[in-house]
Length: 88
Length: 223
Length: 254
Image 1 (cartoon, rainbow over the protein chains, first blue to last red):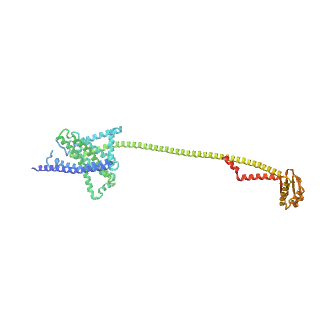
Image 2: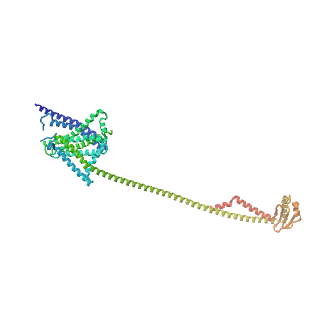
Image 3: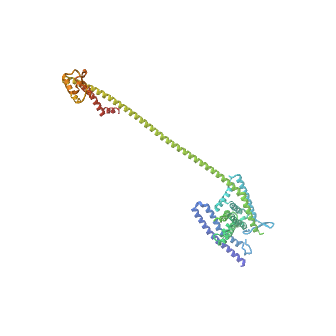
């Protein structure tokens, strides 16, 4: 087992772990945001446009963490600075 | 197949300046947008009751109202900037659905450029509205110790803007590419539809966030 | 120059140029057109509001005029009613007054009629009474009556002849006898010398003595006259006091 192989294995495991944990956190956060937005919409239907806009912005904010995780995972997999060979 | 995630392939060089594929795509998109704008304005001038004119009115009025809702007053420059951002990003994302075209917003350089524009617009708008001293003072509120946090927040949100857009568009494009490579015909269609939705949504979020950031700077001195 | 940096710079410049071009070519004219539309709409709205206000004002005016007219009509009606009532009252009062006057006239007429009747009646009855008394005295007549009358005259003479009563004039139907003259002279007392004796055929039995102090009539004619006069007087007095005839007139008029 060469160093490159170890690095590749660790990078793959790290990418999987990053994606999994990041997705879990983002999913929980987004579900809570959605529930809160539903509650607010049911309470104040007149404020629907404002609530919807805030909902989208909040979803994007939270989802951006998952996207960060995805980017990190992709970097680990495809643009790993420690591997000599870029996979593809 | 070739997966393109980071970096832009250079098509040709003009002197010392490399011309990348992203540059060409965004230029074409900009030209299309300008042509569309001219057509719409022509329609507004000649046939104000036509549905094409109504689309133009709708776009302008929607963004003006959005700016008014978020900032608290009408601001033509911010509205123009954010609306241009929305139109450009949405057009790039939609263009990514065309076969053989890599979306310009799928390049980290493009999204960083857009985020940098927002990042620079924030202090410009704040200083223009509140004056230099008032704008600088707001970094030291409520406590001078929080100044590094303000700066880090501004930097990180700019980074978040760039990476969010880039990650969404690029991952969507990547997934479609993988599905095309694995399953072929018609299977990636639902994912492409989702990609359309996400592309429009990200453009909307980018525009909204730019308005929010610039609006926060505009109303910073009046707190 | 790296490809990424070149792309970054180009994209920034591209976006700024695009935003400026869109703002100049697209947003500015469209905003202008929107503002024009809005202004036109607002002007139309204001015009409509003005027209609505004018219509409301006109309606109010009409309402006011209607109210005033109704009020005037009401007033006019009330006034007319009052006038009519007054006129009716006046007519009723006039009619009542006329009726009153007529009744009064009729009553007066009736009273007058009854007065005349009464006078006539009194006269007639007095005449009848006098006639009866005269006839009675004539039937009684003769020397006894003559002497009785002279005696009563003497009694009266004696009552008034305490002082000077001359001149004295004594009238009789036929010349008095000496006894009678002596009786009278004694009654006259001191004034007896200036006594003038005369004869009056219409006098009937008895004597009439005219003195300086008064008239003593003890003749049949004088008695008859006195009786009739006193009867008439008595009847007039009675009628005035008891108003019997007037009551009769009232009953007639109502």
